[in-house]
Image 1 (cartoon, one colour):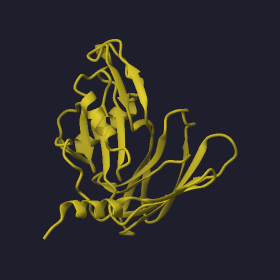
Image 2 (image 1 turned 45 degrees about the horizontal axis):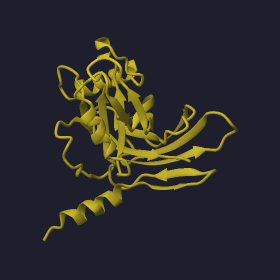
Image 3 (image 1 turned 180 degrees about the vertical axis):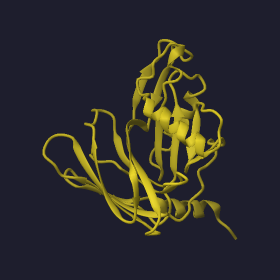
Length: 242
């Protein structure tokens, strides 16, 4: 007899990276199963986006790498999204091309590189990872924080790419114009830094410098490793340091 709830709990524990943190050291190790990668493309100028923003917030504490990429192509309506960057729109266009989509839209949820229209359903896909990741904060003098990751693909001959993000929680915007005029919007997993890195083969060590954290906004440093051809995640990891 199958026990779905027990199975999902077991899979979630298997996917959750082991992490340890203190005032000095902070590190994480990926699990044997692929940590789900959730990308939300959203805008404060889009009236249909707040429900998706609220849904993304429910993923806090779950074993996923969640990221809210704010886009600016609705700014012309009258409200400029302060979290949007052209790089986020560029990434959304790349994802759309890989999915055979003729246009981009908000809110769009992407799960493990695939357009996911049923995002209100439970995230239940856990599959073997295609890479192993060890991520740690690098102790440094006062200034920008450094991070270092060791990436080891399961197939040593495979070609892979990666990108870093820094995501922050507990942002609030009081919208004064546009489709959401008069609304107070709350955001979690907001992408504040997005840095694609090159194409690699075999085991590699990657380095990253994060922008200074904002007081009152808990954050994560995320690394997503993908297949260079398909964009499908091989493994992902998220690290929150005090």
